[in-house]
Image (cartoon, rainbow, N blue to C red; front, side, top):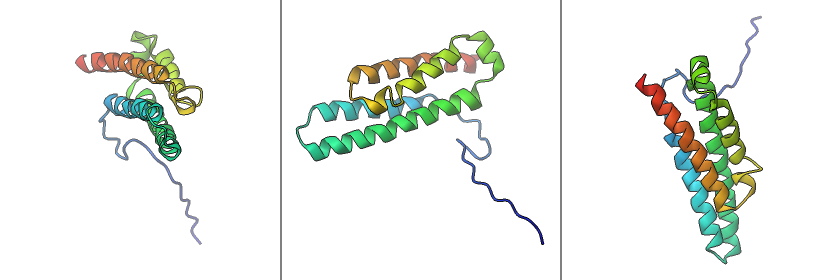
Amino acid sequence: MALRLIAEVSAHCDLPCGVYDPAQAKIEAQSVKACMEKYHGSDDADFKARAVSIKEQRSNMVKEHLWVLWTDYFKPPHFEKYQQLHGLFNEATKLAGAAGTKGSNDVAVADQLLGKIDEIADIFWETKKA
């Protein structure tokens, strides 16, 4: 009798494809901010509940896109050259988490998250020039 092991795995790409872009995280973060703005602009309790639910889902997606960049795209030479990179990713993923946009409706927190993503994107595009 043969023993078969089955494992479920997930990744950005099953190849890996080598296609990475911080724009994915930024688009989701922009969606988070828009949901917060719509939340604050409405008096409808059901609409506000939907806005919060979507904002929380999108916040998770921001973290996932950032994690892919952090763990799959960036390599040790990048972290050596850009010593702030680990800190930026840590700060950005926390800003997208429960203590950040996922657990808050504060638009200023979404702006902070977008700022961190922009900093990561600047470094990302510098690495593509090399």
